[in-house]
Image (cartoon, rainbow, N blue to C red):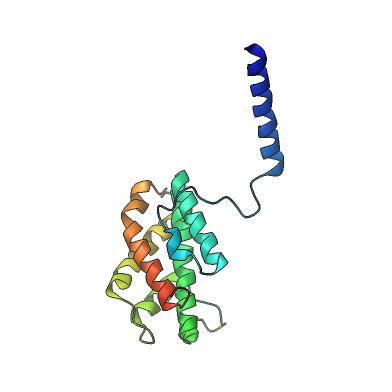
Length: 171
């Protein structure tokens, strides 16, 4: 019995050494679940959209809620830009230097856009999603909790789904 324990302990030590030396996989691990962004929602889109969605889901399932909120913010920003580009009006969301505007200005432009038809749900949800992302990104005293993300999952889904369709990334 003691030799079996010794073998098991040695195997665990070797595994820990290998993990420490190799580090995590180059492109990260796939999440075990898709509690925030359903896999079917982002399937057959661009690889960077899939990667961001995986990071959102992985951070949520690990309880890394600030990371999750920041990645939600990033996904929304990316999808807004994709949508304006698809409709040929990206110039509306660029500053004088040609750089894209900050998220608050991207959202303001989205709320006023006429080249495509943002839904009432999108218009209502965007400010809420931005708020939690901003707090997690910029407020040094704020630490997101599950209760900050979980009530927004329906809004996240509807915003992501609408922007994927409006941008032409999903049919």
